[in-house]
Image (cartoon, rainbow, N blue to C red; front, side, top):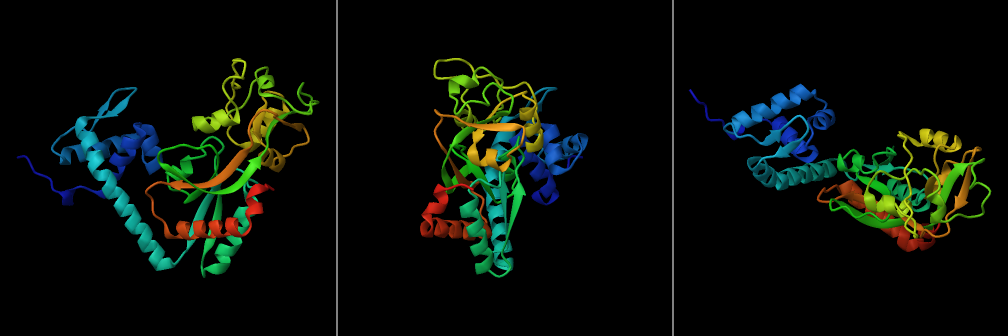
Length: 314
């Protein structure tokens, strides 16, 4: 006999899996984010589909996962509810603990450090129990921790134009563009280089987002020559430095990053025709967090009171 399921029968973990899968459209990545096996993720989805009258929420092949019309409709109705629930829980945590903990993702501790360090000092001094925790951002996944809500704010280079990310106060501006090369590299003896020079060597460019990658190192020179990415996978900064020192690639970046990771076997050469870079704080759109907002207000106070700090990088 057919049993009609009600909302009371549907578990939060099933809806959570549905929303994550709708974002990832990949069972392996969804399972990894939720700490499940792939087979367990599939079983959870089938249980949800059964409770919803047997409606298929995703079309699945060996290569592609897509939302069905029913799945898209459910996602569109659930999305604002999930956001409201997240915001309510964040406000409850804030009321219970005061300003509390704020987690900030940083790729390079030197980027915007003058403003950031002063804001951290004032924030922790101004609120009882307030704590700022700096979290290292993966070199190959700079926005991932923010989108997964593993951090509340992220220090990011500009330009950044992502619909789900809000750009906040500047931490630094005017950071020069440079290229890191091995000390015995043909470019190492130069006083400066141009974008045209980069086309002669394999480079390491940020994988994403595209607008940030293009600003860091264009895909083509002004004359139209392609700039070729090195055929290597870089996991972290230590591996990047090793590859540069070995002469396997050159790395266009900004002066604060190069200076922070200064290496005896690596030369730092200014790039004359790339515009200077700025750094800002960014957060996830639609995600409320009282501690984050209190910290942002502190940063804005620091920038207003000491504008020179944002114009200089450590």
